[in-house]
Amino acid sequence: MENVRLEIQAPLARVTLDRPAKLNALNAQTIQELSQAFAQLRDDDAVRAIILTGAGDKAFAAGADIGELARLEPIAGRDYGLRGQALFRAIELFPKPVIAAINGYALGGGLELALACTFRLASESARLGQPEVKLGIIPSYGGSQRLPRLIGPGRALEMLLTGEPLTAAEALACGLVNHVLPAAELLPKAEAVARKIAANAPLAIRLCLEAVRRGMETNTEEALTLEASLFALLCTSEDMKEGTRAFLEKRAPAFQGR
Ligand code: COA
Image (cartoon, rainbow, N blue to C red; front, side):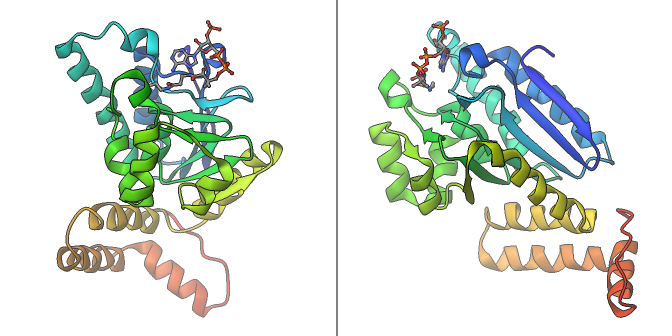
């Protein structure tokens, strides 16, 4: 892969958008390589949490590649949107947590990618925005849908209609990111959070992600039924027996992911 770096140190994996000369702008090749990286991570049982970040000290990703965008015809434009949407949806529904460590600009497709992640951390220098209307377009990788669901329609519409980015502090205040850190502490903090998650029962993490993601897309009645069903499924797991037994025996659990 040329534009994406994948490093696995089980139980964690780090995916780095690696095209710093273009501020990690997401061109077609990067989208294809990201798809490849996440397909590999899905199949690797030793990986329990993923950190997604950008190379260099300026950008997580400064958006879709505007050079490519400028050449799009209608049918190609639709395919372009659908391909990116498919990858971002796969990340949103990924069976393992994907933590975005936003180390600079997260604009356009870059913010949309971060929005598809499980949650987000940012460095103090991060700037997060959806500037598409400045280019005569709207978001096409889910930004017009995920942003209002995450921070509410009023704040999202202000971002979407002005195209102006938020500072890291503003993003923290509206819940767009969970933590803001000095640049040098961003990845260590992301790793610390990822390790805490990776120490918990893997099936429980997977089904908890599913309960929240799927549940938030349906009504409360169905969501609660889903929660009960997923809970019941976990009652059949060896990890549930191990986790409860370990608590009662006052020892640390040894989860197997079964
Ligand atoms: N697509 C393609 N190339 C991009 C890019 C993008 N989204 N964002 C930045 N780049 C390229 C620049 O063209 C430049 O390339 P060059 O050195 O070959 O000319 C390089 O990355 C560095 O960017 P530059 O604009 O010189 O950096 P800056 O620090 O002056 O400004 C930004 C940083 C993020 C404010 C500015 O690059 C920008 O506005 N980018 C576009 C953001 C955007 O609209 N994204 C949404 C796309 S839908």
